[in-house]
View 1 (cartoon, helix red, strand yellow):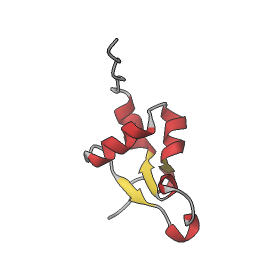
View 2 (tube, one colour; view 1 turned 90 degrees about the vertical axis):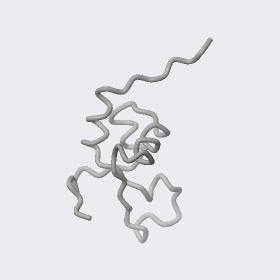
View 3 (spheres, one colour; view 1 turned 90 degrees about the horizontal axis):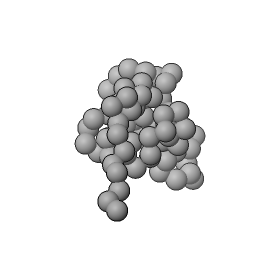
View 4 (tube, one colour; view 1 turned 30 degrees about the vertical axis):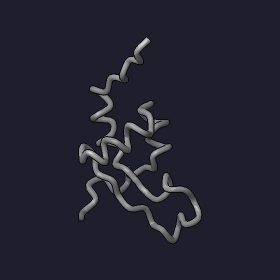
Amino acid sequence: MAIPYPDQLVFEHEAVQATGIPGQVIRQWAARKKIRRYEGDPRRYSGHGHEYKTMYALPEIQARAQTYRPRSKAA
């Protein structure tokens, strides 16, 4: 699979910092195929948690973040 944004791949925690979207929401978008996830280099990041093994294209997350509305919690 060709990577459309090779210079803009970020880890989950970096996407959270850049967009303010919670990491759980980003993972849910990926699970629902609304954004794509990419494999990080396991030799470079071995020993870290899963957040260092999965990468996301920041432009895809930013595009979805424009319409994201957090759920209001029931009182």
